Amino acid sequence: MISSGDDNGNASQRVFPAPVSYDAIRRLYQPFRLTGATALLTIALLAVVNGIDGAEIKASAMGLLIADAAWRARRGRSALPSLIVDVILIGGTAGVGHNIDGPLVIFAAYLATAAILLLSPRQVLTLLAAAAATVALRTSLVAHADHVDSLADALQWAEVCVYLTGLTMVLLAGVKEIRATRDQQTAVLESERRTTAMKNQFVTMVSHELRTPLTNIAGFAFSLHEMWCEIEPTEVNDFLAIICDEANHLREIVDRVLLIPRLEAGRLTLEPTDFPLRPVAYRAADQLFPKGGDKSATVAVTGNVYVRADPNRVEHVLHNLLENARKYGGDRVGVDAIARNGNWEIVVADNGPGVPEEDRERIFGRFEQLEHGNTRTSTGLGLGLTTSKLLIEAMGGEIWYEPGFPVGARFCFRLPVGEAPALPAADKEIPAETSVAAETP
Image (cartoon, rainbow, N blue to C red; front, side, top):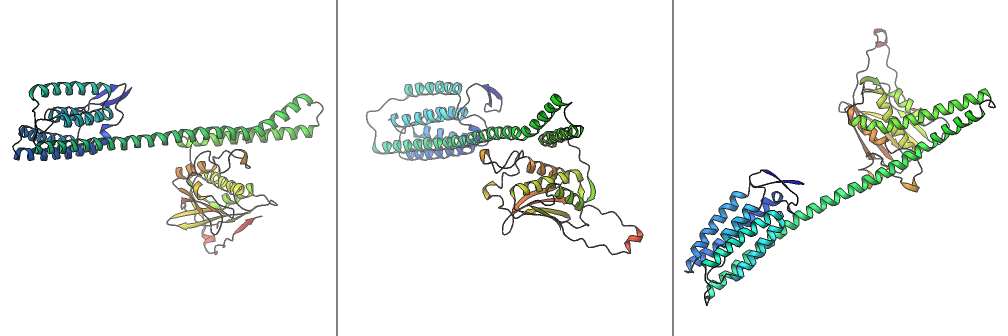
């Protein structure tokens, strides 16, 4: 059931609504109607001047039609009252002179088109009943003459042109609305298709991520169960340590998946405080870029960088951005902080290929990865950037991507400046030590 309303705004229920929303095109349709009535009034006045029979009635009817169109331009949610007025005023006075066949045919075409586009089936039946009554009355009152003078004939064809123009305008307005509806439907279908693809991709990624720890847990647990007495105690401890590590890995995966709905529902507890960013940045870099690796990270955050945020969540964000740089960036990654407009702007940059321009709008979307299917060489759920964005925004900050120069990627986020703790009186006389950029090989 689709709810709609009548001309007075009262809600009603119809199983089959009109194909085109009248309320959406009212401000376009009523001016067309007003213009057409004005043209018909001009034709009727010419007929009055030239003494053609019935022209005065026609002119009066068009005056009423102009007033009705002007009044309805700003109200009403149904086209039925407008079309009934058209039937009575135009259908009842169609044809200047005696020959009314041509104008009535064109007017009937206009009426049928408008009714099909703008009315529900039940309303169409109401309009047809009003049209039939008007035509019957008109036929009984007007007799056909044996001749029509040239001026009356010309004015009749002018009236036909007005009806054709009105018909064209109604069709154009209807086509525009149908096209807009089709575009919306296409967008919805595309969104649904993309959502389905993302869901399938997510299932694939989760299966891929869970398979290794589950296999390891099952394998070592089965070995302990079958050969407990035959395995050396040191090996038992090693097996149990592996099982614990893999169980923690599974817990981390589940936590990452559940973090987003908790953030969106406002159920994630944040504990903002003023803390130094430097040790947090070093800790995240050391975890992802151990010594002796093929990639290195440089932390150029000075000791006077204090931010106002939740330190655990900021470390989580830095971990996500550094992990992203390790996967997709080059062999060198840097972390820096710049004071700007009362905030600290933290930058995680790399010398890799960067993000293609066509993908920059979607990289912060959930489950988004630049690698898909069989071309995917890295691990992860595609939640890192989405989680980082939600966390930073929840802490009152902002995160964005910008291309590096001349190459690379720069992921930047902004957090409020925190207040550094006051130095003891004895320390105030000692010059502050200048911090130097440190590198984790």
